Image (cartoon, rainbow, N blue to C red; front, side):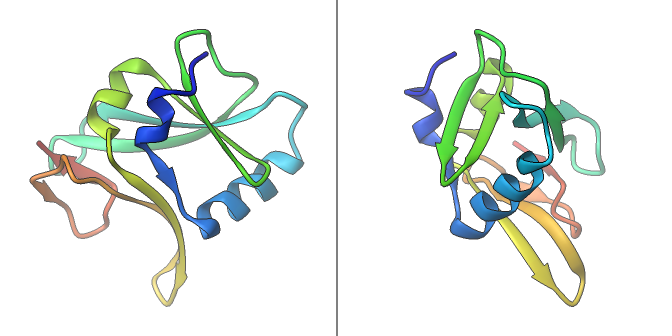
Length: 113
């Protein structure tokens, strides 16, 4: 588990607050996992899940009670990104502002590089 590479990904206050609230109902050691997988309308898509614990290879971001784990392959796509939580008229969702993405879909969950 590393924290150096995790500094390349930022969490907004809103994201940290929401992730902390989600993890409060989970077993100790649980993390909010962010990953990038092939698929979606633009080629890649973000996946969000609760995992029981980070792996040794994961980069871990910790902020205000939030613990986020990112696997090494996904970190290559997420370097420099900012994870936010938005609550607006369209609903509640996590959004990733990714400087590596050259295009994204309207829903904000898929992107291309």
